[in-house]
Structures are given as structure tokens and as C-alpha cells.
Length: 159
Image 1 (tube, rainbow, N blue to C red):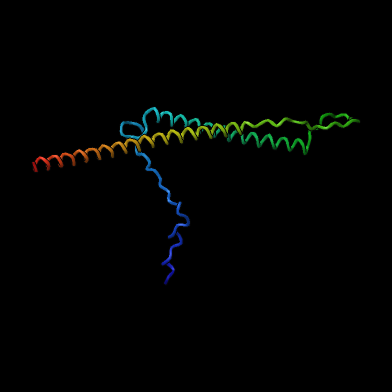
Image 2: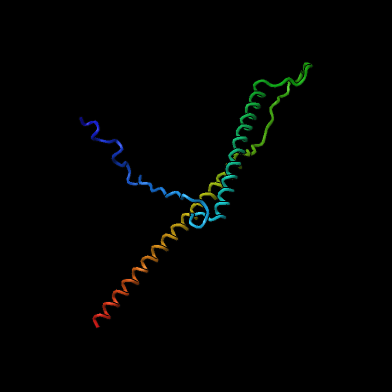
């Protein structure tokens, strides 16, 4: 009987869970759209570079994994160096300097592209908010002028 009376998600756990998502534009580019042609061109360029960087990152991950496999297999099962028997045994291991991988550079590049994309989208949203505020200000100014005209008309009638 009371099974449907209480909903588990009826209450918020936290007062800061309210998320306002911005309205996505329906048009891209043009006179009435939020993006200008230059911004749209720049956004597409950033997205293309981001896609290419992600592909490079995947390729670098695969190459890194293959190199790691090869290194481990060489350490576990070393290749024979010579067919003749040696009296002195030499170690096959080398001391290598830790060189930062190409993966770290690609990750920094991707982070930079994502930041540029977010900056561009924020600029578009700020410009749209500015236009909206200017329109509201113009409406309020028109209402103020109408009230002043009404007051002047009343004063003119009274005098």
C-alpha cells in the first residue's frame, strides 16, 4: 500500500546539486546564431586538431605497449648473441636515461586544445548574455521613457 508513496530521489542530498544547463543553440553561424563565421571556423579547426591528437595518442599508447612487451620479452627470453661458447658472460642490460614519452606531450596538447575550445564557447555564451542584457536594458529604458511621458501628460493636465 505504501510502496509508491515515497520516492527515493525525492529529496536532494546536498543544496548544491542544482545544475543549470545552458540552452544549446539551434543554429550555428549566420546573423541570428550565437557563433560568428570566424568562431565557427575556429571551433571546427580546434575539433579537427583534437580528433587528430586523440588518434596520435591512441597510436602512441599502442606503440608504447608494444615496446614494453618487446622489452619484457627480451629480458625474459634474450636472443642468442653468438653460436660459439664464451668463457666470459656479459650482461645484456643497459642503463637508460628516463626520457619523457611522447604521450605526455600529446596529453598536454590535448588539454590545451580543450581549454581553447572551452574559452571559445565561454566567449560565445558571454556575448549572448551581453546581448540579452542590452535588450533588457533597452526595454527598461523604453518603459522609463513611457512613465516620464505619462507623468508629463498628467502634469500638463493638472496645470
